[in-house]
Image 1 (cartoon, rainbow, N blue to C red):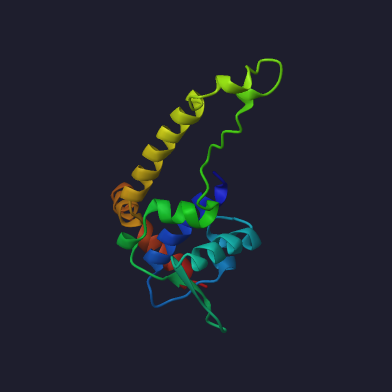
Image 2 (cartoon, helix red, strand yellow):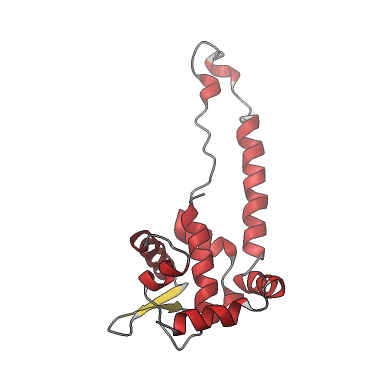
Length: 157
């Protein structure tokens, strides 16, 4: 999984704490965590295509959340950034090279592919069951001052 997922998740939380009345540029969001703005902008565009954030054009333009945090799952963000493809792709290397058996020997599925598919399904279910609002609540319990600190920093632009 790319670092873009982490960046996108943090950006969504920051946008939530900033509030829906204010759009924030990718450059400003990137500056808060000292990230490359051009790369973060690509992540924000992917979130926009997925309907997670909306973009506002003009001199006061930028990004803001397109829906409430309780309607954005972690899986929504992962899929927006990484795409819907499975993380593990079996290429059936067991059937290649000097260790390959005869063509008819492979009637059962690859045990490694089956184990990886089962693990991925569990991972995807867990991400789909967790919302950004769940993460926000935990973050605010861990650092109650964070929302105000973030709002003040972005207000200072």
